[in-house]
Image (cartoon, helix red, strand yellow):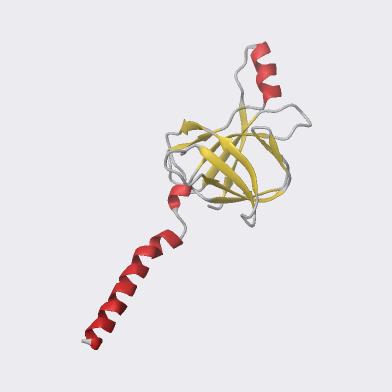
Length: 151
């Protein structure tokens, strides 16, 4: 009887550990992306200086457009941004970042972010100074640059 009990206990422990394994590995649902930038960029009013950052979605399935920006060690949230759904026709194999046109001397402003292989992505508001200038001129924000990431 003791032999059966220990066998059942070991079997139960191994089943429990296999159930936990998927939650311990990286989850593609959070769209974790690591970027390194060599110049400052503006993300909805938060200017990120040159360096490495981790961008990912908030863990809740109800908040699929809350984008979190962390430092490289993921121990400090730099910004929590509410994005707008964006779509593209052709997915690519890498992360794609596109930027708004900005005035000379201003940090490029992030326009969209697409995760590798996804047609749906995230759009970020134009900086207020650009939105006001463009609305006075009757011009929509213009996308002028894009970069790709390793993830």
